[in-house]
Length: 156
Image (cartoon, rainbow, N blue to C red; front, side):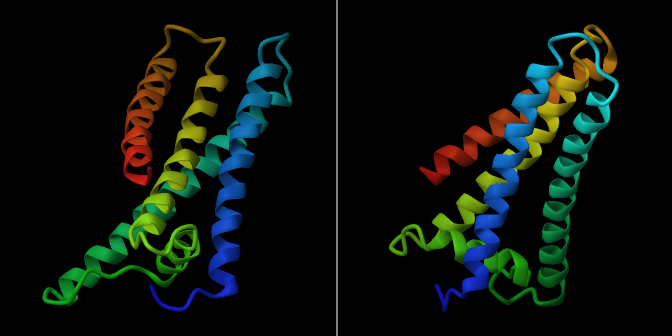
C-alpha cells in the first residue's frame, strides 16, 4: 500500500457515514411508516432509495472504468479509478498487514449502501403487500443481503 493521504481517510469516513446515515433513515422511516400514512414520508423514503441507486451507479461506473482499463492494457495488472484506490487505501489503514482489507471493506460499505436503498423500497411498499413492487423489493433485499454476507465473510 502506498502513501495514504488525509483525503483518503476523509473519503473512507464520509462513505461510512453515508452508509450509517442511510440505515438510520431506513429504521427511522420504517418506524414512522408503521403508524398512519403521512404524505411527507414517501418522498423521504424515495430519497433514501435514490441515494442507494446513486451508490450502485457509482459502483457500476467503477467496474466500467476497470473494464476499459483492462481492454486498453491487457497485460497490465488490474487497475482502479483514483477514487476507488483512495477509498481502498483509506479503509486499508485499519490493518496494514492485510493488503486486501481496504478493498473488502470498501465493497462491504458499498454493499450496505445499496442494501439500505433496497430496504427503503421495502419500507415504501409496506402498505402494498402482494404487489409486484413489494415482491421485487423483497427479492432485492434477500439477494443483496446474501451478497452482503459474502463481503462480510471476506472482510472478517
